[in-house]
Image (cartoon, rainbow, N blue to C red; front, side):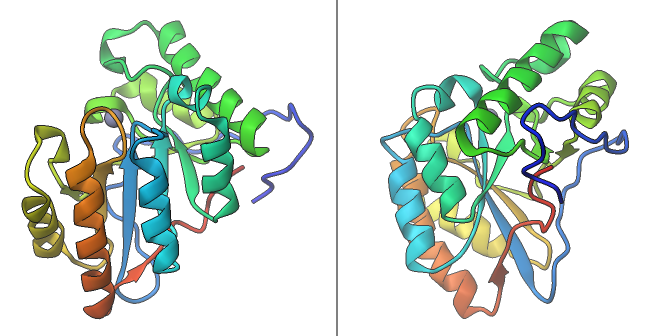
Length: 216
Ligand SMILES: [Zn+2]
C-alpha cells in the first residue's frame, strides 16, 4: 500500500461493496479488536496501555470531531502500529443525510486523519452500522473498505465488564471482529473487560491482528 504518497494525491478507489466485511481472515486463529467513537482522553490511553502490555495491534474507528481535540492521542495510536479507520466527523445516521453531507462527513474525517498521522485511512465504519448504497459508493471513492463486526460487546448498553468479557469469549472464532467503544459514554467497563478478555484470548491460542491493508 502506498500510504505516504504526495500529500494531496487522490485516493485510489476501491470496489463498491454491497455490504460491509463482517470478519477478517488472517493467518491461523486470528481475531480483530476494534474500538469506536474516540479518541477520548478518559479511556483511550488505558486501552492503548493494555494493548501495548500484550504487544498486540487493534483498529480504532475515530470521529473527526474527537480527533481535532486529541491529535496527540491519534499520533500515538498510529505510532504504536494500530490501524486508524474513519467513523465520520460527528457520528450521524448517514442514511438520513444527503449525498453531499455523507461525503463531507467522511472526507473531512479522512483529511484530519491524514493531517495528523500522514496517511489516509483504508477502512471506514458507518455509525450505528447504518449503511446504504451512497455510503458504500462514497467510501469506495475515498479509497476505503467498509468494516462491520461479528461480535458486538453491547458496551453501549452499559453492561458490567463481566458481561462484556463473556460476550467476547463466547463469540470467539476465527476471523471474529469485536466491536467495543473507547468513547461516547462511561467506558470504564469496556476498559476493564479488555484487561480480562485479551489475555484469555491469547491463552486460548488466538492471534490478535489487524488487516494488512491499513492505509492508502
Ligand atoms: Zn460509533
